[in-house]
Each structure stands twice: as structure tokens, then as C-alpha cells.
Image 1 (tube, rainbow, N blue to C red):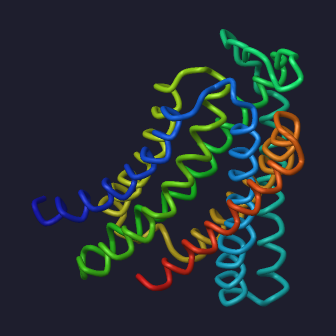
Image 2 (image 1 turned 120 degrees about the vertical axis):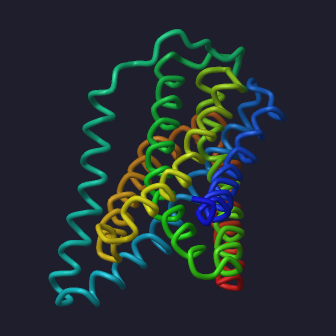
Length: 270
């Protein structure tokens, strides 16, 4: 098992960089609605960019090469909208989160409603699930790559890590504002980060025989559907509600710009 120790360690450390994003909650005042507006817009922008420019694009490329183009397009559409529909059903069926505190006052002097806090909590849960599903094949890929070329695995782990930090912010921010607990916010990012070493364990147990490019493509399209639903149903509306239009769109722009810049760095380290 010693030959698996270093690949597993590399994968674990890459996953734990998600916690760095979660630590942002320690530096944010919970009654600052402008930061919340900017942060939710940032999360939405980052997720929308990743969904359309990375996940769906990669999924489409694989499915179109594996099947006839119209069949690949149909599979992509079914997986993407399945992610949206299932998320909508879960959103409808998920019970309200109890035991949460309201904010002090918003900028208009009115208390944020229990319904608004509950929406934030749901958004945090959905983001935790969606981003974690996305991390599973990343951990799998890093671990398997390390079996042959450690240098390549380290470069891939670094590229994944710089994506994990803003993803940690996206998970932690709604959880922190909904619960008021910095520990829960960081804990959520820790759980998400653990998915990558879990992916490594799957790599060790399965060694790729049950996972292939088509499996990843289906997972990516489904995850994109989850992220798009959460972004447009929860993050963007709440971003405008808790701040103003300018802070919301600034956050969206910053999120998209950062993910585009990180994608460029990712290419350099491939």
C-alpha cells in the first residue's frame, strides 16, 4: 500500500484547498448585506461559467465523439435537464431549516425573513452536493494519474486546487449567512473537499474499469443542471434582494472573470 500513499496524499491536499475558501467566513460580518449580495453574485457567476464553458462543453465533446452527433446531443440534453428537474423537486420537498437566527437589519432597516434565510440554507446544501459531485472525478483523475507520473498529478492537483478555493467560497457563504455559524460554513467546505480523496479511493478500488469518459460526461452534464438551477433560482434572486443590482452584477462579473482566469492557468499546468 505504500505506493498508493503519495498519490492519495496529493489528492487529499488538493481537496482540502476547498477549506481555504471556507475560511473567508471568518473575515465577513454577517450583517453586511452588501458583502452577501456581492458574494452570492460571485457564486452565481462562477457556477454559470463553469457549467456552460467547462462542464457542458467537455460533456458535449465526449458524447459527440462516442455516439452519433444527434444521439450525443440528446443524451446531453436529458442529463442536463434531469439535473435541473431533480434539483427543483428536492427544493420543493426539502423541509425548512429550523433553529436559524435572523440577521440584525438589512440596509432598509427591515429584518430578513425566515423564508429568505431558508433559501440561503437550501442554496448552500445544493451547492455542496453539486460541487462535490463535480469533485469526485477530479480526485479519481489525480489519483490514477499519479500511478504513472507524479509530476503530472502534482500539476493537475495544483490546477484543481486553484479552482477549489472559489468553490469553497461559493459553498461557505450561503451556509454562514443562513446559520450564523462559521464552524458549519467551514465544515461544509471540509465535507466537499473530502470527496476528492473519496474519488481516489474509488480509483484504488475500481482502477477505472467502471468509470470512463462517458460516465464523466454524464456526471458533468447532470452537475451543470444542478448548478444552473441553483444559480438562477436562488443565488441571483437573493443577490439582488440583499443588496442592489450593481453589487449583484459586479459579483457575477468577478466570478466569471476569476473562473476564466483560473481556466487559463489550468491549461498552462496540463
